[in-house]
View 1 (cartoon, helix red, strand yellow):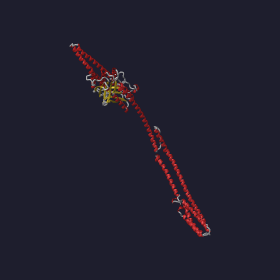
View 2: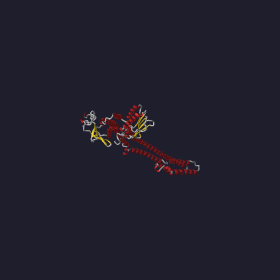
View 3: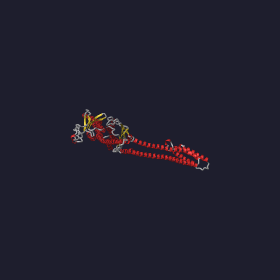
View 4: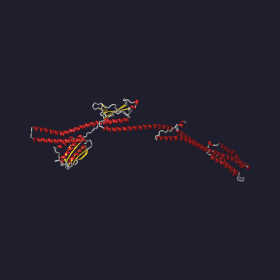
Length: 625
């Protein structure tokens, strides 16, 4: 019973077994009743034939006396023998032994006794006797026929009773099976269909993220256990879903905060990279925004001193005093007060020494440590926040490193520029002044010796030519350095030079410039510019040209400079050996490891061609990071 109460499968199996048992019982009883009716029809037929034989014997005894007596005797004996044989027929015993009716057997035995003990003797008397014996025999035969009728009626009644029993059994078992089916259907509907519908509703509600629906099953069967498991699972899913929603919402807030922090770092990086060497003005606002967003701070940035290795604070947010290195007394970035005033906390105001924990991150480029960034925090930092702070430190390290390299490069550029100016002055103006100094000493000696004025005029003429040459060289140097220093890059200087000589020549000088940016050093730019100016000066003074072109291109890692005109050209298609301007151009080409060629063009005019491989100076060499 406990199994039936706790198992839906046992319920169904029990109903199936009960219905199957009833059906099998019904079939067995039907077969038994059918077996009990076996031979009834044959017995009734044989009993009917007995009645017919008895009637035939009676009819044979009624024949007139004038008929052949022997014939009548034979006929009666044949009919009597047939009747005797039929009385002894097994068919009259009505079926199997365990299905025989005792009352019918008694009637059959009575008929046999009546025939054998009385009627057989009377027949002999009737055949041999008078009419009275025949009359008495006929009366006995009529009584025998009446008993046979009673026997046949009993056989028929017994068969009808078996048929009625079979019908009753069929109806009874049909009613029982129908009742059991109704009970089974009700039980299945109550314990199977309805719970399954509730489970379907529960699963559908769970699919629509409604985890508040419950089945409330109280049964102890499989579906009851499944329903309670579903209820428990729905409750756990509801809790998990709410936890996941909370975590997703927290992650969304964290992602928004990270996105905002990345935006702040990006904007701050642009300020860092473009803000010169003033870290306070460029990094301090970024620190304050990150402190408000990430709930951290204060933050302290310290850099290593290259000379003594000590660290000095560069930026310290929410500092109580102005740093010793401060250069701007109108700046209050480090002295900014905390977000909440002390009055906000009342008696629970935080003390200055309660700063929580501190995270120290190295500001380093490769293996070179430039300083450290200290971050105070009260609540534990998430991995994303730590990653964000590492990104901030990387940007700070890159910006500081670039500032150092830019400062170094500016110093190197300044030294190179001064070296170029000194060399230009030494190679041109200083030599001219030395020549003039020698001529002045020569003139002084001639005046001391009081030589004739005619001899002194030659020296005075040389002095005048030397002064004019020195003045011209000074103007060229001023023009060259003004062009190279006023505007960045070689292309603007070349364009200005071309425009200047276009005005002097009276026709536009063409310019072709196809050079990648930042491929030439300052020294190379100055020499190329000076070669162009010297070549255009020769075109202006000697070529008598109507067309000129300057072309500077870069092909296959080589830079090609061409200055061409359609003037009178060179006399022998060779560069003059002792021409002052051409000597200067050769010296400048030699200084940058370039090849310089002079030749007449096939179309007419002169061409100056320079070819060399530039030695590019890079601001940040490979391997520094």
